[in-house]
Length: 105
Image (tube, rainbow, N blue to C red; front, side, top):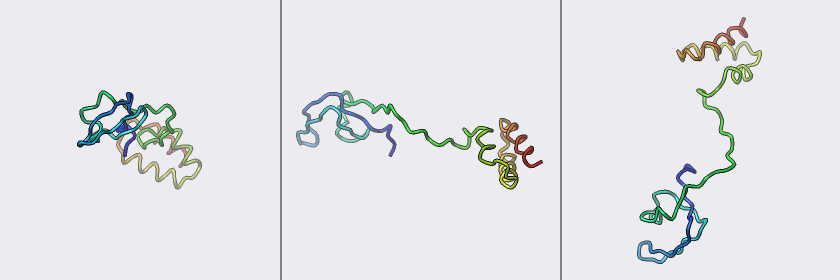
């Protein structure tokens, strides 16, 4: 489950859920869409992550230098990467294709 669907209680209150008294304390966490949140949205706010882990780059975010660092001087890998990039048909990858062709020689 995604962290962006987590909500944190910002105000302590006593409330009723499904006929039972429930005390919500500041700092408690609930998933968006949970019955405890319905009709009480004003008591919750999204969790803000202050120290996020760096996520791996997607293929679209990979830079020319990233690919060249990964491939290095391995001509076999460079040829495979070149074939892949040529099949993508993305004009933005022209520089990468040229760099890979240089490695292959």
